[in-house]
Length: 176
Image (cartoon, rainbow, N blue to C red; front, top):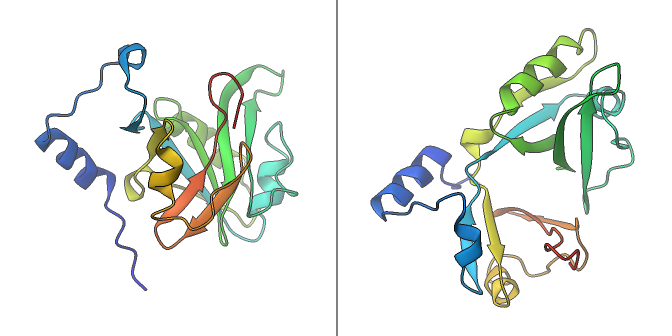
C-alpha cells in the first residue's frame, strides 16, 4: 500500500487556488460546521528503540504508558521548570508524534536533539509530510465516519487507518 496523503505544499497550493484565506480572528464568525487547515501547527516524529524512554525523561507527561488508542497533552520545560512549549502527542506503530505551534517547532526539535546523545532515538520534522485539519460542528462526526469506521468516543481518543490519524479533542467548553 502506498501513502497517497497529499503533502502540505500540495494542500497549500490547493487552498490558494480556491482563494482560501482564514484570518486569525475569523473563529467568531465560523458557521456551525467547518473544516479548517491547521497550518500553524508543526509535527515532530521520534523514532527508534529508545524514543519513548528518551522523551519520557524530557517532558511533563508519561510517554512510556502512552498507547495507540490515545493522545496526551504535555509540556517541555527548561531544567529550572520554565515552560518552553506545550504540545499534543500520540503514538503510531513506529513513531511518537508531537504536534506543536509551527513557530516553536524548529527550536524545540533542535533542543530535544541536543539531548539525544547515545539514545537510540531520531527526531524528524514531518510537518510537510502530513496535512493537519480541524473539523467542528454537528455534522463533523457524520463526515468523519466516511473515512473512519469507528470514531473516538472521548477527548484525546485516537483512531488510525490508511487515510491517516484522527485525534478527538475537547471543545471550548470541555465536552468531547
